[in-house]
Image 1 (cartoon, helix red, strand yellow):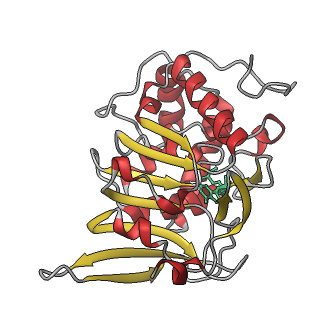
Image 2: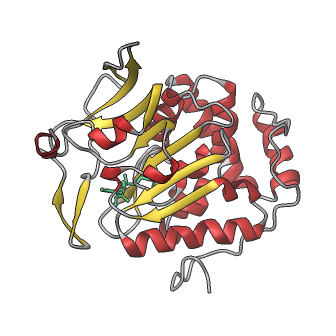
Length: 283
Ligand SMILES: C[S@@+](CC[C@H](N)C(=O)[O-])C[C@H]1O[C@@H](n2cnc3c(N)ncnc32)[C@H](O)[C@@H]1O
């Protein structure tokens, strides 16, 4: 069964000829060189690869992707495989796209800037809240070998787990680095804490205290904060003084409102409302 079962436009995924390696030399500076390299080494479609490189170039001009490590990770991630078949041809547009269940895959510029703001180093532990399509964690899996991702919508979490498993079977061995679960991500993932970096891909009006607690000192959370539909994406750096006092330094990474889907809540196993206003209940 296809990972996009029932979708008539799904295309067969080519086998990846050369497994991912951390020291792969990816020619990122030149489009033709990159496309030729990726056709040979990744077995991917020339048209999608061309669009991917063009989008990387636009993101780099827009300062969403500025360092080579993150550009390389973007170029190695087949965004088209995380879009619904009906939207595959639009994978490299700058827009966010519908993925069903009332939620979206964020646009590439938003994912790029948020990911780069985390400054992920190889070997760091990264937690994502809001697996959605799986694209964000797939991008992260080219930056570190320890990615954890939580999705609240059960059928979406299961579908995306299936996408990763099919891609791994196709030869994208790097996605073995992604551990997933279905849960309410507000409470983080204690079992794997502390995390070096946390990225939240749904919007809320405060920093969830459990996430701040599960972040290492000097760690970074990137999170859309604000009222419904009008969040600002903050980079939050956690500082811990010698006496244990925690402070945070915040900066707005886009300098403008960027709306996100709500940070919803599980009550008795059902999604009911959102976590806005919950900080006061945890004091
Ligand atoms: C913008 S969408 C998906 C973005 C995703 N990172 C991607 O690359 O496709 C945000 C996701 O957050 C999920 N979400 C919302 N509240 C959540 C919660 N409390 N815990 C975990 N996931 C949540 C939504 O169901 C949705 O899939």
